[in-house]
Image (cartoon, rainbow, N blue to C red; front, top):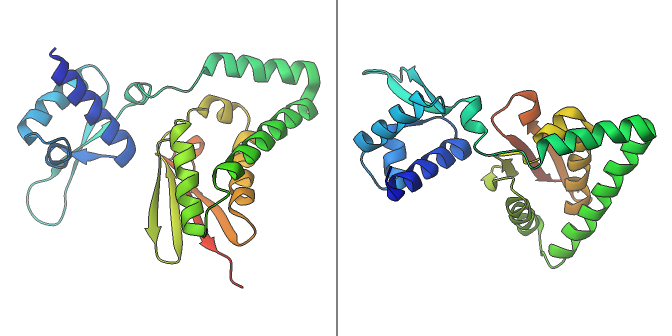
Length: 212
């Protein structure tokens, strides 16, 4: 396989990961190639078990084929140090119990809070804070992006680099929701609307200004 083909395939997988199921036409437009070329790549990826297709009927005309990642395909975007993390969580529980694990999560949350606040200290308003938070999370591997919606913002995290840890211990997810609330301040209302650990494609947080 040519290097250019490898780069195109990695880009296609990334786009499906971050944008959800896509047609060959849409993917071709995004990577700057033909839908025919994309279909050829998708067929090869399907043979490798990395993607599957789903035919969807949209109004009139023939059904459109949408491509999405399989579990194997999602593993191309790995959890950081997954096995080690799970073993450490189990060891903490065995040695220090639930209280010890709670203290560990709290300590991680406090360190993140200090770092995040330092990085967004000069943010003038909620919108700037949310975008700055997304940049921090993007750098940490969460594939974060901000969507402007009526009444506020949606913070999407298309990948969870600590997914195994969060699945093993829900306290990590609760801690992150609390962290976002504290970083964005009392004037913001933060609610999680979708959750990777619960089976969603991505985690999404709705962030709005609290009514004064």
